[in-house]
Length: 276
Image 1 (cartoon, helix red, strand yellow):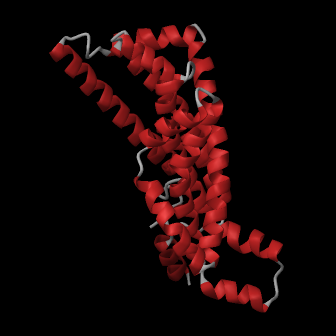
Image 2 (image 1 turned 180 degrees about the vertical axis):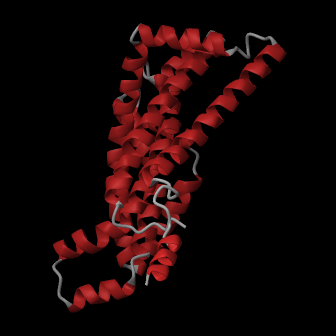
C-alpha cells in the first residue's frame, strides 16, 4: 500500500509547475504590444536620423509637441470634442444596425432587401460620406454624426446579422418548445449568443468612426482633432501632426484595452476557453 501511495504522489503534477492563468494572460496582453511599440519607436528614430529632414521629425521633436498640447490642455479639449461626435454617431449607427440585423436574421426577404444597401455602404469610402454630409448639413454637429453613422452602420449590421445567424437552431427550437417568453429568449438566448459579435462590431465601428470624423473635421469643422491636424498640415508642422495622432491613438488604446476588452471579458466569462 505504501508503494502505491508513493507512485501516486510521484504522478501528481506539481502545483508550482502550473503557471498562474491571470499572470500568463497579463503577460500575453502587455508584452507583445509593448515590444511592438518599442521596435516601432527605434525604427522611426533610426529613419529620422538617417534622413535628417524636418519632414521626418525625430522622437524628441514629437515629444515636445505632444508635451505642449498636453500641458496647454488643448489635447483634452479637442479630443473630448472628437470623442463626443464619435459617441453620438456610434449610437445612431448602432440603432440602425440592430434594426437591420434583427430583420435580416429573422426574414430572408428582409435580408435580400437590405443586402444591396450593406454592400453599397461597405464599398463607399468614408471620404465620400464626409463630403456629402458637409454639403447636406453644413458646418454642424449633424454632419459628423450622420457621416459616422453612414460610414460604420453597414459593418455593424453585418456583424450583428452574422451573430444572430450563428445561434444554434436546436436552442431556438428548444426555447419554443418550452414556451419561453420573448423577454426570456432575448435575455438568455439571443443576447449571450450575439454579445461577442456586438463587441467585435463595436470595436471595428469605433476604429472606423475615428477615420470618418477626422475627415469631417478636416473638411468642414473648426474644432476637434481633425481640425488641429489640418492646421498643422497647413503650416507643414509634421511633428505636430504626429503628436496629435499619437495623443488620440493613446486615448483610443485606453478605450480599447481599458474599457472594451474589460467589458468583453466580463460579458463573455461564461464561455469556456481551452488552456492546452
